[in-house]
Length: 110
Image (cartoon, rainbow, N blue to C red; front, side, top):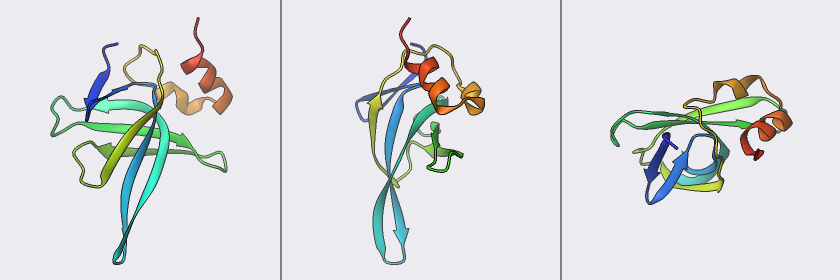
């Protein structure tokens, strides 16, 4: 798989479902919010400039994408929930698919 990066000894690949623990500051307090979705794009050639785009479907059925720089101090942890064996470099085509069709395309083994 050509589109695989390493983040803190974890292999992240295009099409994987990942959970990103993101620190949010609210006033004086700080809490961690989990953003779980599918990794659709990896951008940047060096570790200092590397960014990922994660897409999830919200509870009301709306697609939400978040662009996260990997060297951000607000990312506390990234966990791989489900791996995919998809071979494309960018998964822009999943923007037009339903949740069921998207799961069939990404995780169905042939």
